[in-house]
Image 1 (cartoon, rainbow, N blue to C red):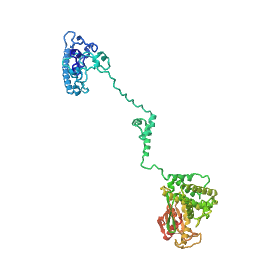
Image 2 (image 1 turned 135 degrees about the vertical axis):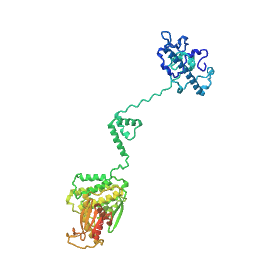
Image 3 (image 1 turned 90 degrees about the vertical axis):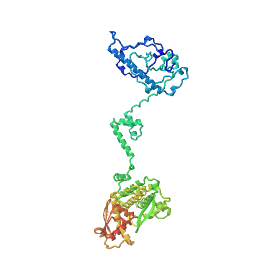
Image 4 (image 1 turned 180 degrees about the vertical axis):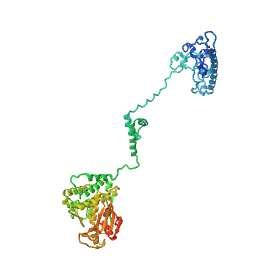
Length: 564
């Protein structure tokens, strides 16, 4: 076999069976291909007779003389053949210049050594097919006439096809060796469309950016056509924005106290609580709400207690549990009046001594008896004692309201003693809240007004005591008991405020606006802090007018009401 794919003696026959490289045929569109008869081609592999290939001549009219149209077609055909020959030569030259080293190698077989194989046309250089001219073969397997100057390329036959042409003709890939077909990768089926319910269920994950890329695309496409889901998605995105807010998501620290105040103000008690018992009931409940959820660290948090003695401030360091124990020890003074068990009875039985009466001594005795220091276990007995005091006083009613409660150095009616205990619960609740960095508000305005009133009623006796101790100025005008005497106008502003006139020269005298020699103005909460010993008398007054000595005596007497 030669390099052109043709055997030596059968060159003319095999040329008819070869495929040619078609070239662009712009003028062929003017030809009438339907008028050209198509010859019957022999089977593949057989030699075609000469008469099978018709001679390409222009059609002749019936009168025997060629017409003008036939002449035009003959000229166009000659021009087309010349053009194809030129393009074939150009293609052969281009292919020879692009020949790769592999095609230049000499084959091992003797036939391949005669001449190199015909170069293959790269796909990029393939000339587009155009309709063939009249007289060309319509089937690729049939013989084709050889045109002068036309470049023909033959398909190389495999060894199997050369040995058995019939088998090659029956093969689905003629001219190639039998080989398994290349594996075909199955196309990925499209993802099934998600239903409305599924897309709606994915809105939460979509808002949190937790969907896959496919789910995100499906949800966002669904939102463009479903208004209810779009509204729901907008609300979910807004909710997600709240989860990443810069502000704190913690509840208002004062919310619990406000709720408790509202509940205590509206909830009807099983046993009607007398009005003079309600401040103590409210303040013990507020303090219990503060310490109820404390952990071990909060119960052992250090607390600084403050009060005034004579002209100086005094402090005492303890813990949150120690403060609750102090309140319980002093509440024992009231339990004895109501016939209840004194929480210091165990101290009396063990030591064989009488139970002390003053608040300071009772507190010291309790702290000494609870060594090591008290823990959160002190809350239950204290709260139980406050409940028994409230229930017992509520059942007894007005019959016990005027009973005297001794504090050692002075005595108070039970109704004032309960008000005093409510005041101390609030003050020490504030101390505890500051120790654990928690807000704690003042009592209600009604209860705070009553606390201020109790302190104002106790000031004339405190002034007389300081005068006897030489800590206050002498009395200037003594009057009969019940008569108006020199007074200081105490104006308490704001929360729980009011006006009080404090008698200066005698505890038995009556304060009167007509005998006022000075005026001092303070805020309600600030005045209570002064009475509790938490601020200095010099810093307490917001406004002063009149007798400076009288004002000083009243302010220092207010601070002297404080105690441990």
